Length: 253
Image (cartoon, rainbow, N blue to C red; front, top):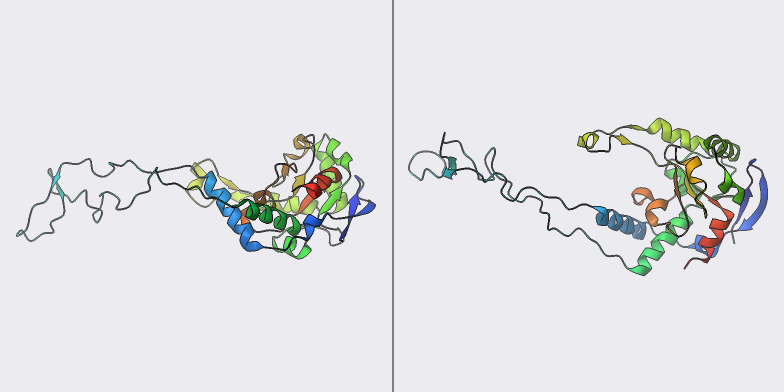
């Protein structure tokens, strides 16, 4: 069994505990990626264009024998229209609202993906490859005392993260926030923000004191899924959890 440190609010090691058996699940990047893609697919909103777009014209073909192509042309002006091959014509194969984006995933595959992504949080090599910044001396995943859940102010949370040696990752996310390069700027997603620390807590009391930290996400053991643990399908997220949350994860089926 792998032993990890339990850190107090002052950053000191209070004790050493064994990680539950779930953290010894084999690393399966293929199953993790498959599950994350299914989650993203099921979140998609159906979209499509007007079925009659590009066809609301009075058009007619001039026929053969006139030395010009026989594409449909406007009755007024003889400008080509309607056909997919002309400027201003309809789209040949437009997106349709009735398309079904839903993807099914097997229960055992979903469970394996979650457990595999959870086990990857204990691998320093995978966490480093994701670009996370943390002290080399800390043990992963980072387990903290349950008193961490009672912190009421953001500055107190920052102080604990600094003492443990992982606040540099929040700074990395803050410096990495930038304006999106694309049309998404005008569609409610102007900024791209790197993912930082994932906090797993059995209580929701820590939410208000941590939600303003850039890139930090919070969840509880019951709602934990593979998308939290492996954003974009890439496992190895820097994770901090309380002792009570660890016990729930160890007994989860």
